Image 1: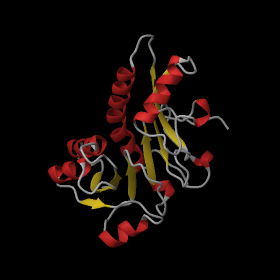
Image 2: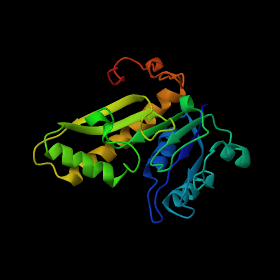
Image 3: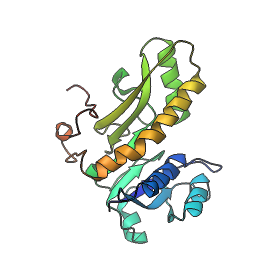
Image 4: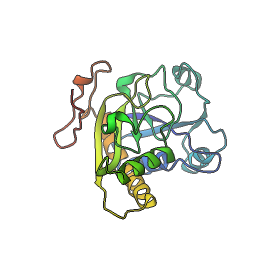
Length: 218
């Protein structure tokens, strides 16, 4: 069974719901994938609390230049790496085996909804502002492979939600969060099963099943 190490920052007081959702979904769907550990840069925050409750090995890692030391120092048997609210630059992991979920559409506005410091509430603020200005008519979530540049690895999945006039920022945030939880485990399973593939180098090598693809224009 594919073994996945999750990276989730969370906060000192909470967070980690995406990590929890991945664990619970995988356990409810035997034979899909196994979460073998979770890494957080908050030593005693919400992610650790959830890891303890779920009996998933927890690793505190503040972030550094070489993430491969995690596998070496902790003897973690993982071949896949799922970022779920991880706020640090990732280096030293195999890019074709490392993927992220992002609470915004990375293909629109020349990638303005992604990049360094564009996470969490900042993505929601920027998304809602763009919706109010009429710069876009949809919002949603993206999943992409991870390179050494924030949110610029190949996008292989987007789920778009139509914006309705009068929707509040809170409603946009709630629907985005719901979509993250619905699709992250399903798409994760497709990645670790090889149904979604990237060679780690050439963006044009990304392969996804019909109906799931979102590849930005060349």
